[in-house]
Length: 244
Image (cartoon, rainbow, N blue to C red; front, top):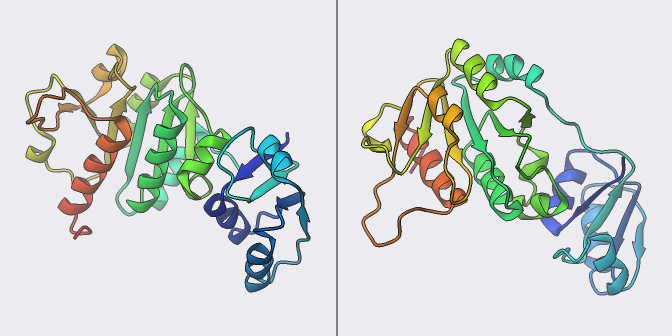
């Protein structure tokens, strides 16, 4: 299955992880910079020069920044079967769970923040949600290549399995009376956030150990899911003594 990765950071991260594409494309303007970078990482890959129209076509209109890599097979993927090993390898498991996030820009931003926060894995529902599209990879700026991303067919069952493995689940809900900041978030933890404008589905809410909210002091009733993810993840880091 062919996979397209575009955008400077996304392509660089893939190359630095040893993923050599079948072909790497750029335009004449960006070629010197890219060739210099390839030399710096001792990569013998030959850059192919094409015009702007060809790059736009390869990236399906996305903001490729002159960097487009074509792979003849998709990157390593993770499944629910990998969760026990990922949990065992983590000193204190820290999972981000996304329920029905459909906007690729939101998912990409969530992955980028998850990488920065040292997340063990990101879990997402398979149905009615966006996967790792080229746009998601571009927005994630390389994080899609570094953060284990797991899609599951039955999110409620996966959440129950996490609970049985000792992970405490905190679901973000605007209706919750308890603030996120009032909870001890230092143990094995899963933060569960819902879709844009819809929040958590009923079964997802029921699987959470606690429902928490973020204080909203203005007129807006909710935050973008990627913004809320950043706020929540960094509160966990602060409590664990790893933040600023």
